Image 1 (cartoon, one colour):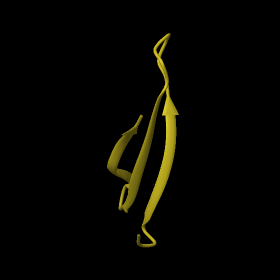
Image 2: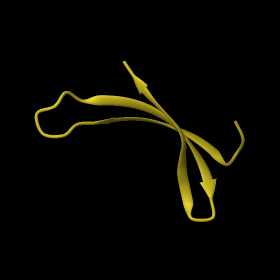
Image 3: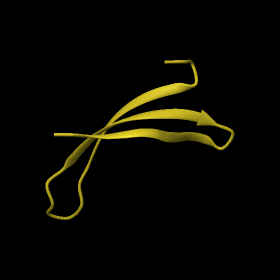
Length: 42
């Protein structure tokens, strides 16, 4: 991983739905960080 890449572990939910957990790899762009890889964690 280079200095311009970051990893994030995130969980989100909506209404009464079960929360979903994701691991994402972020890359730095001229407009800020962007998601490069988004993986659903079971």
